[in-house]
Image (tube, rainbow, N blue to C red; front, side, top):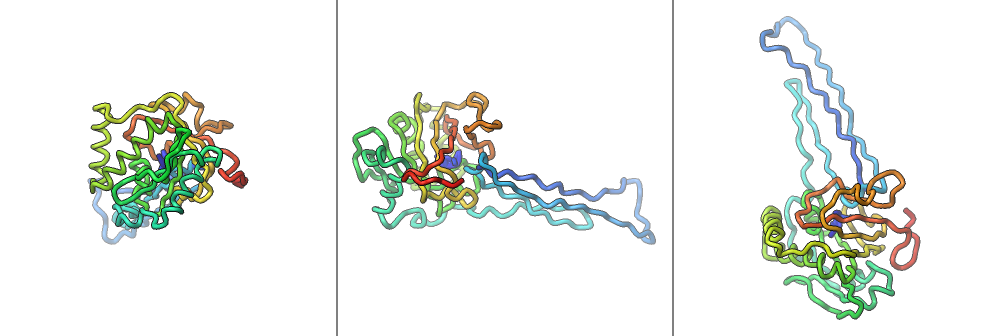
Length: 288
């Protein structure tokens, strides 16, 4: 999953931290006082513009839209910045015309010693298709934007490409999330309907809980995890049944463990801990 990012990844997935704007509101006169038309009133409004700092811990999701405020003498009115991808784009924009390129991108998620013997899936108009049978239990594929948390701005971003290789435990218990979400998308389900369907499937135990040892590789140099995250860092992901970040010491000073606590609407029964690593799958330094 991307940015959970999984996102993946989603998320998945340096986080983008933002200081929320401290928009001052004009002081209102008490109702019992009527303004004197001959009196000049001075209204003073201080605006503190939003600032953002990209840090290593907040990227996967790293995709926050800040409110755009418009102030008037009669009061302060705020408008949310328009979501960049409010709805699904045409399906063709999510597909890769060059199947060989998608296979290569999928395999690049993990070191060649792992990915060359892995099963590979590619996305077609009818869902993911197996194009190479593996022999080591791993499965590699390129996930799309709808694997991001539901509250992530990149949820429908057609440019997003999240190469991932799942180990055998994750193939059995995490890959079903990807296949289920993708089926809902291709069936034409709205974002809200997707969320409802996943919640219902979890309640009926139709989607598995992560198996012990479930993990995945996201070390592709050419992946694109979102407009703010970009390639982000090569990293490993550990898929755990829903838990608190403190159980892994995530997001604390000096800890290499990252948890996306910016975008958290993931209805599947998992928590994803990310551990950035220093090299891409081809062995080159990540320079982050």
